[in-house]
Amino acid sequence: MNINNHLRLFLILFGATYSCIVNSYTSDKEGGILDYSCQLLTEKQLNAVSSSQIHFRQLENGLKVYILENHQLPIFTLRLVFNVGAGDEQPGEGGYAHLFEHMMFKGSKNVPDGGHFEAIRAIGGQLNASTDYDKTDYWTEAASIFLDRVLWLEAERLQSLMINETNLENQRQAVLEEKLLRIDNVPYFKTASEFMVSAWQGTDYDHLIIGTEKELNKATVQRVQNFFDRYYQPDNAVLVLVGDVDVESSINKIQSYFNFSNNSMKSIINVNSTGRAVHIPEHETKTSSSSLSGKSESHFDPLAPFPLYALGWHTPGKHNSDYFAVELLADILLNHDASRIKRQLKEEQELVFETIGFPLTFEQAGITAMGMVPHSYANFSQIQAVVKNEIEQIHRKGVSQEELCSAKKHRQLIILQKMSNNREMTQLIGDGVLFFNNPMQMIADLRAYQDVDNSKIQQVARQYFTDDWLALEIVPGPGMRFVKWLMEILPQSVSKRIELQYF
Image 1 (cartoon, one colour):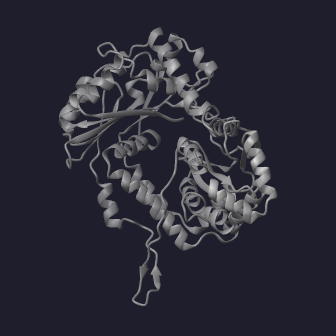
Image 2: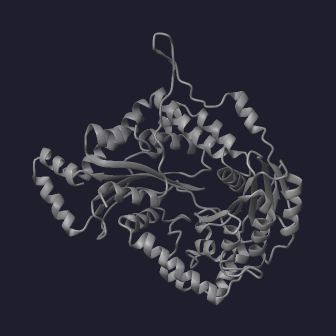
Image 3: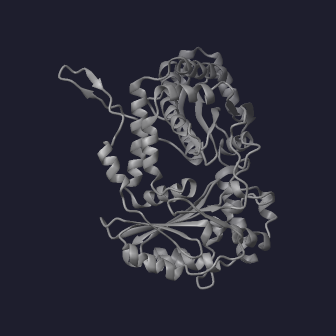
């Protein structure tokens, strides 16, 4: 595996790469630029999209249901989103949210172990699940004629999931094996993951989503059952259905299949002025990252074939009004091939082989970071000086209108692309409801990106992108350290030729 493949693997596992931003502009007959169009939709188009009919019903047991018809193809996506993630875990419950992502496929009263997968694959459907710090969700995509089957399967496991010693032990071992394969034995990833969660100490994000071996081994059937009863209840979930379905018929089916009461969970349902229900969980609101500070560490990774440097900043979560400006600034600085820091480090000063930005943004906290594989003759302090200089320029001057418009179009295009896909649309609606009580939050996001100006970019740059950063140096094994030392004492032109030939 060459150097770029190692970096790519590390960044893919962290989640989060973004496509290249392409500038567009309007030219006059002489070829000069008249102005930049920062908005991909006209106001008329935006209003038309905003008027999309997303139908809402709330069942007597508190389940919130959102349905959007799309009859272009005879398929649908159903997503069930639970308001629980790793950030909701109590002391001693590390990894429980992710454990249930596995447990939910272990069978129920009328479905055998693995039967959920088999039933969906038998109809040619697709399904998957995911867990992060703020939510756990499950989606299924199938032909429209199989809506009843999918609804029954989802209701069945929510009502009568089989939680017993055999299933718990089976999935405990599956999670521990996943941790071993995807974290502990992956170059860079274990070291970087532990550094990131240590940077969140004092918040609800200060532990790995997958949990620790110690906590998972202490999980008992009773504790796991209590977790399920606390969070896997209809009034703690959002059901989103998008595709070739009929609203009234689907509502009747959902009411029929999900017509069961909550268990012992004591929850509060609050209805806002729009009539939409907001679930208020009993656990405390997640702690924001406003008081967190930077840190600098160097760690030896025996699995790492090459050095890796990472720089990051504590940035706000999705509820913060600065979130949209931070996302745009991250694009301008880090997240694509034309970004300022990548261009400086890779092309102009030739200090790194590659650099890719990756955001880790959740409901109440975030980290905006970048990973870099340096050339043998480059050291971390040189790279940090380049980054610091580039950010200080934005502190003083802001960014150009061209850069800002390009970043806005990039962010808007990401949202519009998701809106064109049933599966992605269920996620947009579910997240909008769960975090903002607004199924059309994506329209508010489009407007919010458009409203960011240069002064706002400067403000968030000065507030968040400072030299009080998170700096991580991952040192490779002894063999590669010797090679790096040898390359450093060679003339730079010779080192570059050797690197290009072998790396």
